[in-house]
Length: 258
Image 1 (cartoon, helix red, strand yellow):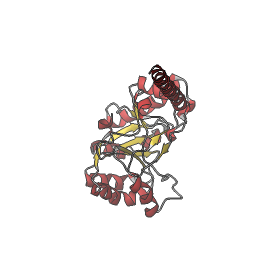
Image 2 (cartoon, helix red, strand yellow; image 1 turned 90 degrees about the horizontal axis):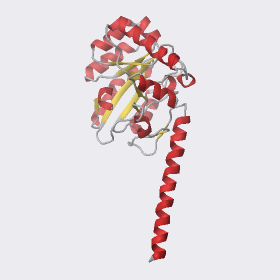
Image 3 (cartoon, helix red, strand yellow; image 1 turned 180 degrees about the vertical axis):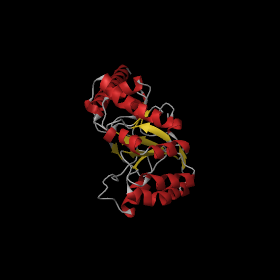
């Protein structure tokens, strides 16, 4: 019995050691990452990020919602206006869906009427930085804060209200320091759990290519990233939303995500 007890104790200690080692390695890996990435394991299930939901949540950062409910959080990145935001807004209004639009300085300066429309129709307008730099290369708190605060100022000029505290790192490039600084500034950092290559204006995916990426990979709690510069997205959005609804999905907002 003594030998069995000793063996059991050693196994438990080994498991605890291995778990601690894994956690240390994972946290180190998550800390070192500068490019947001996803790994899809099973169709219809949330992907794994290269930083865990738990690690991100400690910095008020999120990439996916609860897997218990078939809810989608629809977001758009908008570096500039390419003529497709009005039809996208029309479709969202038709489906009574509130989305989040992550904007940069150029967009707010050149398309204030569309920013006002987004606001008036109940969409969240998030901070995608003023100049859209690689934020992972910014370690200074002053420089990091300036990128967000410049956009806040432009937003307030147009809307007359303080900007919602949602931040999306340009190109998904980040560092643990960035996550910490964003949290200190009162921001929630929003990554994504579903996206596809839709941002090349001169090489747009076909409807079939888009659906082949977006339909099988949708999942409960999905934070979907689409680009509002995409002609394909404007053309497929009505049908895409209808298909997701037919599968039993509803749509939430980032206010419900945390």
